[in-house]
Image (cartoon, rainbow, N blue to C red):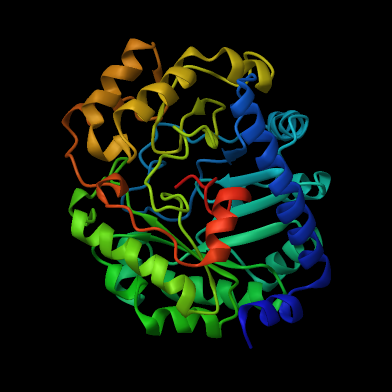
Length: 394
């Protein structure tokens, strides 16, 4: 059975409806509104919002921006509700929910149920997904679980800092697909899992398990345990990009990336204005790995915050002139100086981010890859007109 058949006949009816209407139709309209705002020069407001609801996590991953905090934060439910409500007023209904591990955030399902007109992508390590959790997600119907899958049995435990992580992720996938959820698998591709991530055996195993989409993003060495040795080389990034383009025409599976447009040109979602990130303590960051912020959600309504933020507006302008890749990887010292210039605060929770960036290693990013255009017409259209794969935190 092809991807369309699996999607139509294996997905729960309500989940299918919410995906098509909330994510597909309303999401595309929201993206169109964003494009028109940008074209007209109206007040800026991102197309999508990514929110870390808690810093709590049951794993300790390499290159994670949440580890090592002096104090874990959890977003107040009322503030989360306000962010979503005010974002809907701007015509945007798609939200990425991150952590930590967001399933440790107790008010999460109440938020999903309250905002049935939205669509949520739940970034999870999968280890807390049980049949009961999968059933709760099915009843909400407006959530797609995106389960991190970081390697085989040995590599996954090393990457994620836990035990039996591989088995837990596999079990989570099975619980979610069995419940009829629109289920995705995400891989932070690095040196230790590149071969597995791009292998036919792995991709076919994901197809056999019934997932709807596979999401490749590039490992970025950040946080307390940055693990620069895992960063991909320029040649490996190009190989990953070529694989992604080819895989889209080869496998009955939706393949997503977050770094290249329909013509294969690299870009930064935050610099393009597509998305920004709100961390668990309420600071608005350019993206999750740029843990430097000058604005807090308590200061003013979201529309005013985005309109008035000198730091965020200057960040977009400066990055677009500087690179099409990831500045955290290509020039971390410059980023520290830039943020300091605009009086941004260290929002990492470690109080060491400025110093860390100034001594961090420079590694290749997606901006080092030559242009490899999409060769699948559907993907070209979706990326250009329907935000497909472009709003992610990357």
